[in-house]
View 1 (cartoon, rainbow, N blue to C red):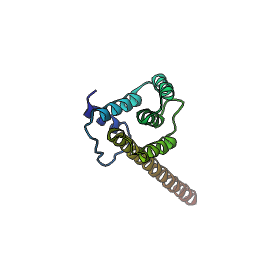
View 2: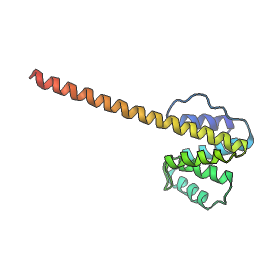
View 3: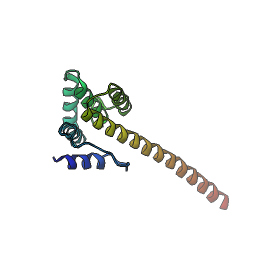
View 4: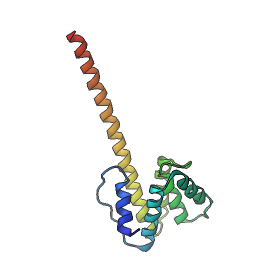
Length: 143
């Protein structure tokens, strides 16, 4: 998968529109994005295998990044987007290499945008519920 295709796939699967994300065209950053794209598009059993392999990987910034990326992807036993956000922030606080930092920042932005979208959807659901209640009440008063 080409680097630009991986980035487009990554953004398309995010589920929400976000502002521009600037990703350096570093070969290693592209490798990390390819890894994320693979996790996002894999079947649940493959995601679980990726997660188990990531848990067995030695420590280091790339392994930490991969675990956090996987933790942000639904469909396996380690899925925990809140923990992924914390792990990505902690990784960035350690001043990682440029490629790791770029991908961590991009995924962190994506998680924040997805959380904002979920929050907005919940607000809209509550508003719609209130409107439905008002309509029910008005309908009952008409009878």
